[in-house]
View 1: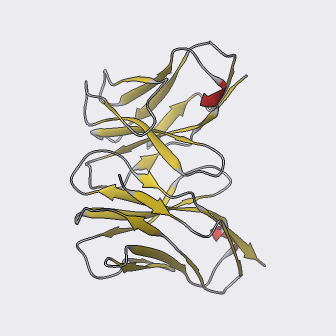
View 2: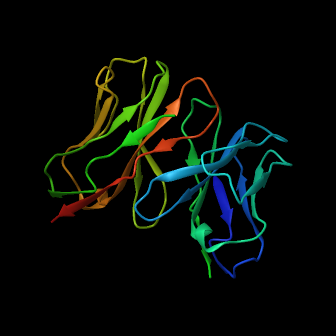
Length: 112
Length: 115
């Protein structure tokens, strides 16, 4: 049982490049989330989804786009990467809004 | 918007002793959930304990227990019989009971276990 899997685990980009982070969960969860974690900070919500085909903005959505075309996958896109987006990105999923979230192992993204 | 405050950036405790990590939160809601997550150096986010605001009884999970004071908006974590494997960052988190949006985290407390 893999749980929540994030791909890739580590990536270095140049300013202006684009990339997509993939989150896959095998628990048939409805709710999925993308967070970022910066040094000295807790996780902050970027975007979330309450089901296939739905997305919504979180606390820090600027510069990111998301898609949930399949229930098990939640993609986070950076169209034009900026150094301020250097961070560790976590994906999470939950069965319902009042159930605990299960987290992936994170993606460390560095933008030069 | 809700806020979560962890006032202790770092705590240190001797192995086998008891330590309490503090967390306060600000909300106007009456229905919500509170969590403590552990993040070891491996970077994983591990759920330690969960508390529903409507429950007066404090949650307990083995050596971990909470002191939930709803009126004071306080949610502290007590770790008994501290073990070397408890060394990690600990994050307090809040979730609204009425919506589907995500968790609001505090900035974390770095817990050091002295052998």
